[in-house]
Length: 153
Image (cartoon, rainbow, N blue to C red; front, side, top):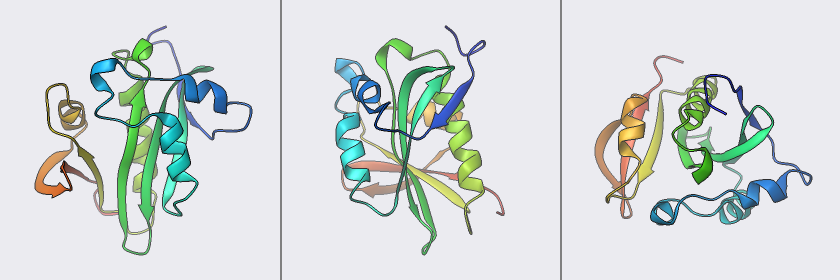
């Protein structure tokens, strides 16, 4: 299956779909860059600011995305993004992020969408740069921060 013939959607995770989402994983080399989905989903259930979805290509679960949404600030960011190692390099992550960006643009007073990453070989910054994110020069703990201008929402 390739991105050209698969419809990518973001879907709520249910009790029925949880197991298949927990089975998704990144390659051994990427594990230091993204937490397992079980950790992300657990964190999401204890954060009022978490918005999370499974990424599907047609009816096949291929990844997970979680946003940090603080509408009071307003502060919006990509908290987690992962695509299963068997489904990478097919355009699913890019399509999912394009949907996330459109969703972020619809949020109250949304001006920017942030993402952070851990520096090192194989980090996802080139992926985010292709989507229009730029380095801010800021750090969040050990992670570098990038932002995408959402225009005047």
